[in-house]
Picture 1 (cartoon, helix red, strand yellow):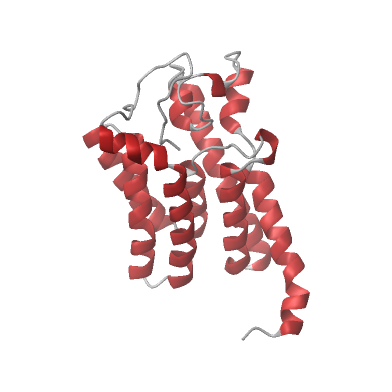
Picture 2 (spheres, rainbow, N blue to C red):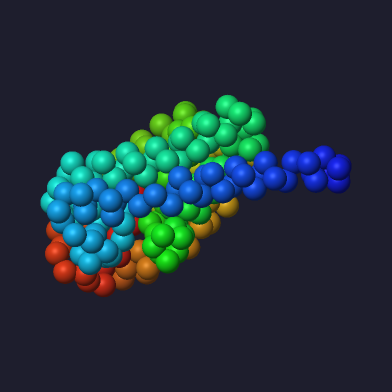
Length: 216
């Protein structure tokens, strides 16, 4: 059982790590880069999502790449900075904060992305071999089926299993929690995958439609 005195002294640091991660995670790079490029509000096209896959629907691959890198790095920076200062346990808290910030950014009325890129960035900062495994699974599934959502769901499901198999129980538990949140955010994608209505990678769309994306 945790020492009550130790917890009383430590909880402000946990809260600060969570808040730091949340603020970084809530930066909406997809919205920022598309507006800066003169394309308006990314939420008015395609699925209305602020993530990489929907940015790709603008036809601007460079903007999609910037969104992917930005959304990933905010997770990586959160865990590396906090981990350097306070250790891995605090880094996990900051990573969770970054993930929640991306999913539920206060600046966008808590309507954010689906978390794949930020999940991947957190994984890079905490365990790079698992990051490589995630990326390999995503690329393989995306190449085979051309569904970003299916690739992300498969890779995220494999991640906590791999971490547990490698003996990183605490990491596995943290990523299991994030995987559950990621799957919940992809509930519409799952339904569309089952019914065959999910859009494939590279599909362009100008007006906002009922198609949901499952990208980073």
